[in-house]
Image (cartoon, rainbow, N blue to C red; front, side, top):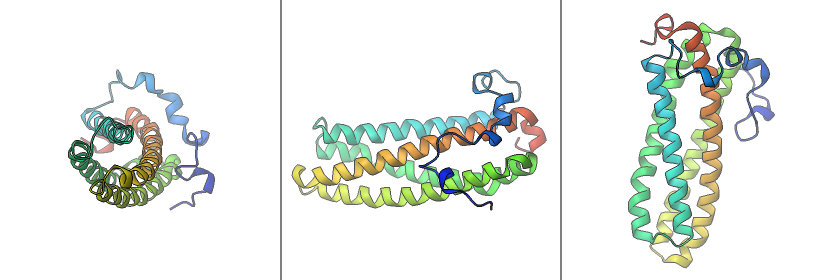
Length: 196
């Protein structure tokens, strides 16, 4: 794997470096939806990304509503726990499939983007560590819910901050991943990549 410079680590970087955006310039986002090579696999994969964005928003919103007193502890926990578990499990599985199956296909197809796929692979490690911290923080926060609002208030604040950081990293990663992968698919087609 290519060495990832500190400025490109997820959580620190802005957009993808220009040398990784050459296919994106040829296939800008506003042209993706109508492109003939945007096949079933790519559409499914993009839908999964949209699901992660939606779930992240729901989780963040529910924590905010609890902190603002709009949700009591039990209704909050009943809403939050199954969605957080689903989010964590699905995201972990999604990354494993990408690392083991999809990224190698894309690197072979477009060797000029290898550094970008190494960057995405590193993102997965950063996100995995953040997910573990988030799960630990959620367990602490949910445990404090049983002790009453005062005890839970500080745990909720800490967990909210941790969740906002995780979601910000995830949103950057999803966008960068799409900006690398979708143009390769549009350029080559799913059949030639062996993705059908």
